Length: 85
Image (cartoon, rainbow, N blue to C red):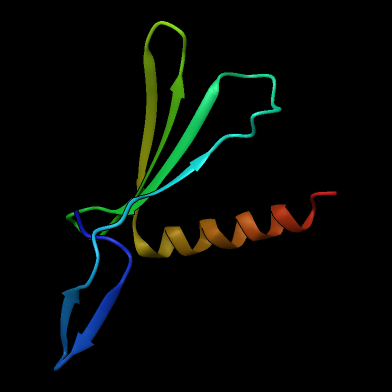
């Protein structure tokens, strides 16, 4: 898995870290415990996985975004955060 932390030296991309970010859901929300995992996969695409930890089994959904789509997604996420009260 490729991840955050890149260094360009002599026009070559080198991976400096192998990192997965995991964001946990709001414990006060009235739903199952959830977590969102974010990282860049081996193909250089952004991988987002939403995992629900239910009492009997785990259930997860994921999507893979190219760079342009990930940028648009991040802009929309920022807009929606700005609308939060």
